[in-house]
Image (cartoon, rainbow, N blue to C red; front, top):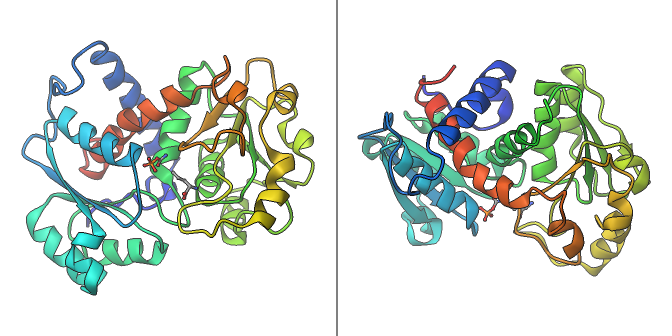
Length: 309
Ligand code: CP
Ligand code: NVA
């Protein structure tokens, strides 16, 4: 059985903690090295990761590519539109074929069911590079960034502002696995999915959904937001208007703890979900967060290959 990283719960809290520790150690061990130089142990030498993109990407694409290089392996990057997948070959058949060529598959797709289908038919590990439902690799990097800012995860208070989307789903899952609190400030009609809230509840975690953005942010250790319009969604003026009170600006950040960390998975829509003074301000960790995609995903890859946890 291959180890798939489809959502954070696939790994569980202990493995996530082990991955985060490994990421911290590997990052420290190669500080100031040329970015393309392999880690001293090159643990994935001889392994190849295939990456399939059905949606645009900058960070996921480059961070996985560099992650494999630093681990001593190689990658094949494919846009779905130029594959037979893009003209009707099934996900299942694509999974079967790629499994004969490569050692692991990462896919960014719209429908989460396609990711599941890929994992069911692949005989190598499959990694979720974002679906409409979740973005677990992003939240591995977010947790790493928070730990680096000297905040141990258990007991920290995370405030999410804006759309109840894929990134929030993975934050809620992470909170319930790693013991941090998540409060959501969002307008009616844009809540996270009930399925995600119920799964967190089964693990003993309640996630308050608040209409008041100030109440959501109050005394938060971490303030996080994301685009109001995700990839594949229509640009709707009505939605933008509903989101406006949830913009993360200096006035809202004033209600978080003085040492609160601001996160955004990027790309940002400056002046919409967050203002420039917050994105570029002293409490923003967004560039470390982006870099940490690389370090966190190296550990995800090693976990998939059974080398961690
Ligand atoms: N945060 C993130 O996943 O970025 P990309 O869409 O650029 O990969
Ligand atoms: N919620 C965003 C995340 C982008 C990295 C989207 O799905 O477009």
